Length: 266
Image (cartoon, helix red, strand yellow):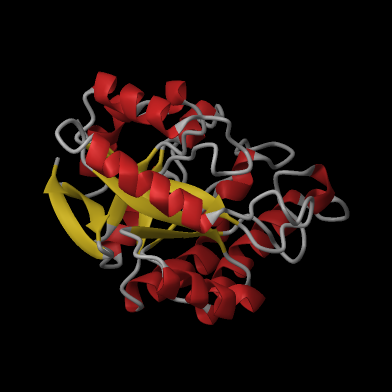
């Protein structure tokens, strides 16, 4: 089985899951390993305290669990940073103070709004809202590069007025290609996030076309995660992953330890 390297626990403001429950479910599923990547989102607009991760308690818990489950399941210590350009210095301080195995950089807030909420789309066409989201990713990458992969690259389509009914890679190819080239030039990866299936999109985040384009442009680092916030969503639709990866040109996927990429065959 694959590793699931994007999951959340009660240390994230949007999850009530006990870390032990996530581990036990992962063992039951036969996963090869997991990485916790709880949220840290400074300056979150809806509630500035919602995603202020207790980093010391989180690290202690994960380290204790690594010892406890040492013989049963490889467990890595990660984080998902909610990127905004003005937070670059804060994020640099966080990463200097904690020895993470894996860092996901993600866009959850675009110019003061989370696309999860309808307010983000007010006064915009869907195309404008999606394009602004992709543009904000470039702003984030230019401001901060100390992450390993960019998370759920087209997260915005989970919540748009028509979700992905009118969304294609081709509509946004200019800005998406610029994102992918910038990530590749900086030695960064992307992820195949299977939560897109959970949200009824019929595709992962990002879509297969974007994964294929990343590979075509020379991208090599690709992690796999379900973005689970509860045990029953761990490894969601992972049975689809090997075929997707092989179809877009990958014969392997990536996990991280001590911020170093490890390439595992499919």
